[in-house]
Image (tube, helix red, strand yellow):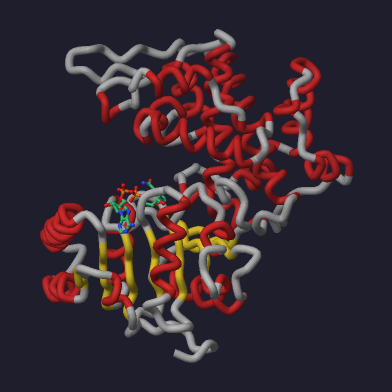
Length: 397
Ligand SMILES: NC(=O)c1ccc[n+]([C@@H]2O[C@H](COP(=O)([O-])OP(=O)(O)OC[C@H]3O[C@@H](n4cnc5c(N)ncnc54)[C@H](O)[C@@H]3O)[C@@H](O)[C@H]2O)c1
């Protein structure tokens, strides 16, 4: 395929790793009309992915979300490979294997010996730098991050992350292709947590901090964020849903990679849950106890307290979104899309900032900053400048 040619729907797509993400991405690509080749070093994982796809397609046909014919074509178009040589004709390969830099680098280097010169090699990594994975390749300019959210067939957002080495045409082709699959793509920089996993840290971190200060319990904080913010799940419900093992590790990784930036500092509260294997729903207990017959704690429905909690958490989230804009992580439109389409926030954070009023956001943060004298509460310089110039992020005419 010549360099300037777009990947067409006839091109074969390779998926490596058939776990939660790989299987989901394969389903998305096959539904978009591609022939998809899936590979996993674990044969049982490959078999499981195959069985899961068949049962998912059956359910979608029963619910009349897919025709029988389309389901059959998806199934026929999904091939399962027994070795990497079967990827030699792929136009794009998306890697979704274990989150380990050495294993990923070895895979990328192995793939380069098999695929054609213009095959794009993408990684679905959540926490590793794209540049570090690309550095294992001779043609590092063909490597890009294409970051789906879980479950890939349901979540609309995909972050497109070129590294400093990525060829611009690779970025354009990747973005166009994933857009054509019906996904919402946002373009972002190769920085820890990309957009969503960076900004969302605050939702958890500030909520835990409020709890640690003894201001409110988990149920009250969850109630406040749902009632006054319209979030579908409160932060503690969500951490229990995601798993405190995964959520804690992501926080620790983002914090470490940001050279121990105070805003991303993990909490001992969640670390202890992680150490005690109180992972949340999947282990039966996390912030809440999910054992049968155990009553869920009830929130203290104190309106003044609830509004204080919501305001403090939302201002911290907004500050992170504004600082991300200031540091050119993405456009303001993409920053807002990322949070609504990637983690179901009820509104984009910059639009929300306009609604609350930038001066109000600034004042709330500045009060905390003055009170605590902690870096985590320092308002972004962009927020400060915008308040001074009486500006908004969006034009509402
Ligand atoms: N789970 C999520 O919510 C989520 C969301 C976005 C991105 N990610 C990222 O996607 C990737 C995969 O995550 P997952 O949750 O699907 O993991 P998973 O553990 O469910 O699946 C990983 C699969 O990769 C296979 N594998 C491991 N090494 C391999 C190799 N060298 N070659 C081929 N297959 C290999 C394993 O056998 C396993 O089946 C990770 O990089 C993760 O950070 C995960």
